[in-house]
Amino acid sequence: MSLATARNLDHPEPEAIRLEAVLHALSDPMRLRIVRFLASLPLGEEAACSAIDLVVSKSTTTHHFRVLREAGVIVQVYRGTAKMNRLRREDLDTLFPGLVDTVLDADTRQRERAD
Image 1: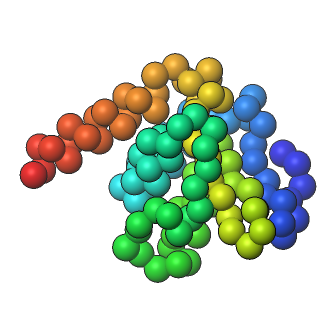
Image 2: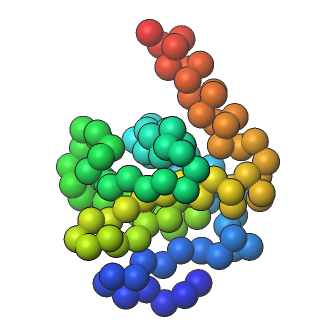
């Protein structure tokens, strides 16, 4: 891992991304909501944290984004004062083919059963 500064956030290299960390990151409903939103964007497109409607405190939101970033699920970069987020779709699909789609599909089916 590279060193992080206040404006340069640390991200794992693809070879350091572990399945158990990704599964842990995806195990929380709020984090799944973030991933679902980012997965709906065109490949490579970014979104600000504030663009994703989460009904939790700012500190809890920050925690969820950090867990996703440290697990290698998302990339976060500063653009001016905004922290922008992008799903690491290509890395995840290379390392764990079909995992993101399978988890999101299973989440959709589960939410439909609950309705």
